[in-house]
Length: 334
Ligand SMILES: [Zn+2]
Image (cartoon, rainbow, N blue to C red; front, side):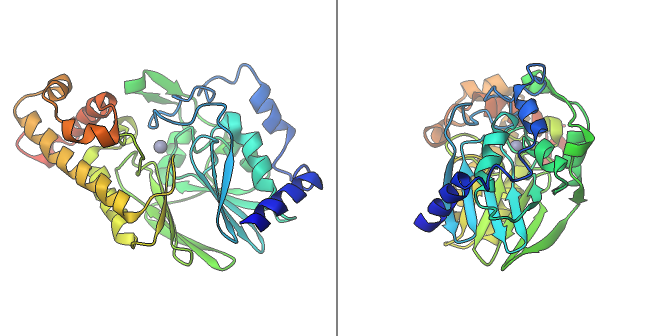
């Protein structure tokens, strides 16, 4: 642990960080351009699906998970850096207003190697904010095909009444897939796959079996109810299934990295699964009784879970709309 921190500081002091090509003037301009307010990255609520994303001035912190994995938090969503002999891979890229700072920190682990790849676990602004800089240096951007589609088009997120502008072509995913794939980075195999219609319908996991680390993205939340963004294909039933998929991939020792927040365990996934599974059945029953979202809230639909998961208002209203889009799958409603 100490060795990695020391190496990082040495690299920054030696100027190695500054020479890393990701720190382009374009990236600096992106931060400084006052007209670049389309996705309002400075607003911590800019992410349509992560209402508790880090505030703009949260300090970045790096936590070594082993000698070649670094977890960086504070730049929006969590970022995992995988260092291999031939280059670095980032899993997620934080928010755009924190990208320069984030990439400077990542470059401290480069040691002359280049950044070859970045993953987007979904299209959210708190994970895709480094795509512009990373795309500019020719690194590949890996994501589910649906995420590429979302990033290539303006997205109107109905429940936020907000439009997210399409990313420029160079900042869109360059390597997409539909089901699953793998890549090798040094001694690590990265297995990645689609999680279906969950938090969005472009969510992916990235599993590193050799280190037993699982990046869950926004399918797993900490201290806040998960939001299934129905405007980009998410819904509660899919969240239940996706959470189960992640549980089945884990064991008691797996370190599970949520979209935002501290490292979790399989027990945390199980706890989310139990809550979501109960919610799905409870919501479906209430919908069959003709209740709307405000009726459900008034009836205390989430009451026994609020202590752990927080304010349920957004969760109930967004979940309700998503459930309607899948009413036939639930049966007995329409
Ligand atoms: Zn997300």
